[in-house]
Image (cartoon, rainbow, N blue to C red; front, side, top):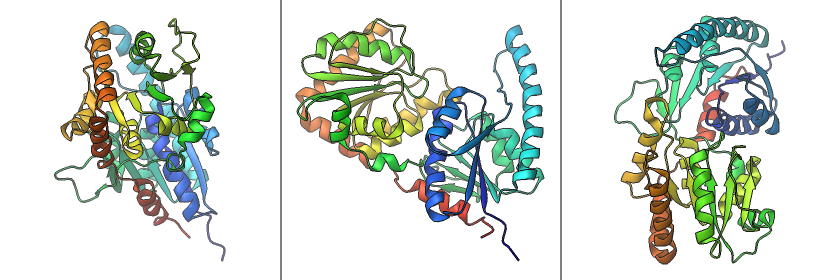
Length: 367
């Protein structure tokens, strides 16, 4: 009798934070089970499809929505529309799972993952979920009731029995990063220093403005590299020391990160743990509007360990510019302090999360 092919569905989307960890796990799963078939179920936004296809995986999209936490007439209207979209997404998910017959569903959060998890539970397909942040998002608050195993990033004092602390899954490209390749991409010499500005997968006007305003002061000492997320309606400097990218593919991004001396970033869990794995001094400006204010809470965990410098995103831009400039000068003039930051942050990361979760998923396989 022929064995059923081992198949896995990965659901989640809406931002890079919901997809990149899944890609890390899917790659490891491919190493463990080369014959495995893997399908991503993502939102209908263009970013999701771009990230997944460039990683070499197949995907499909479903309708989804989100809950807006205000009672303005427009938000009430959009919430009603999204309830309908979620219902459509549930029936799409149900039919997909019936026809695809996966051994297990991995759920990474975002509202696109909710109908998939519910449909899997009804069909008695195991669900394994992952929470990246210190504060669980609303989607995962729902999904946890349908999951056989809930994995998570930040250590907790006490959790239910079916919860498992694994850390944040990191992509293999990060561990292959080369500073030499990063500087070659930028066409700069080994001796030249770099400050990297990353505004997460969707970009950050606040961080882009910092890069624009600080460049003139530091142009003789650092090259600036900006991953703008396409938010380029700012008069950026036209200078060979100012390197502007809308987006970088994974290996190029990690090569540039490895080549950087200081990284200025938001406080998504993926960003923080990638910086930790690369042992980089970081200036962190959390996103001011996230569910449960989770980016500030993520940053606070690292800040308590003395691993990063955190600035309040509500600080007026001119004052924020002044504070960031002074901290860069502090690191530049005190290399031993920069080394302390690098050593502290490197002690916080777990580097084997992708392997742990991949092995967990493989244990559900029919093979």
